[in-house]
Image (cartoon, rainbow, N blue to C red; front, side):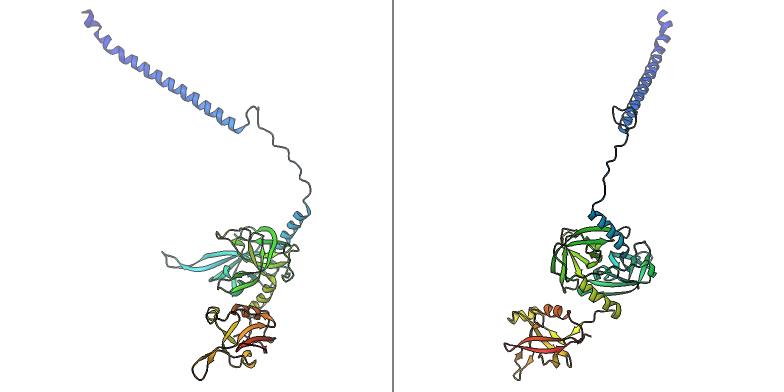
Length: 390
């Protein structure tokens, strides 16, 4: 009986012991979480203030720098003076939306330019605006204007963009010269690659009379080489001398990656000052014409002619015809008779067709030049008065 009487007590006592054990485990877990949280708060506080201090550390004392040196002051003044003339240029093209099929304008490329005159003419690179349906110009005060007219001259990688902006917003850049540049003199490039702010970089004139090739393959001669960084976004921007005068238009960098590697090029300002006024007045460059069709250099070399520009045809009533220059033809027996080979103009050597084009660009329509040519192995001189190219 005693065993049976105590059986219920023996059966229900263990559950009460398990409930107490579970409660104890929960209490222990809660204590551990509290300790861990307090530890994390203490560690976070240690990150916000130096160890070993009772509060916030005071800021370091500022060391006075003194006056800026003369070169720094000069750079700052030059930037303030010229930067209002520098603009951001965006090449806009028309594309059809793939879903709505509507035409929309999208940026095709960007570059830099500068104010040429108060009539709204902006100068930049031809490759910056090439293929644009419209060009957008952002002035230094962030006002934006769409082009009314764009003229380009790819042979020199130059273009003029006409905008209708208030004259008081347009500050023409000061124009210098490039024929008297010297290697080692200071060169400064200002760009506006993103339309938000301008860049200012300095270097020197590294070399003169370099040659690069334009987008259409024509040789651009007399190019200024500079160490002033002119990354792609600065294309079309001004290259300046230490007086803040324009000495060139930044056009290219020599770098396989497309980033600046210490060698940049600029179209010399003397060339710019010849081309830009013609683009503004005529919409094109008015070239002097000799009135000849010249053979390609590869063909000439296959004929074992080592130098000179071979005349294929002479334009009727043109300057060359009047100067008694002969083109290539055939004799009575059907044999080919080579035309005259131009070897110099006013004493300037002509070794190839490109040489002839480059030499003639130094003249204007109406100028009379002395043409030295070879005929049947004999050199002769003749006078020719250049006229206007078609």
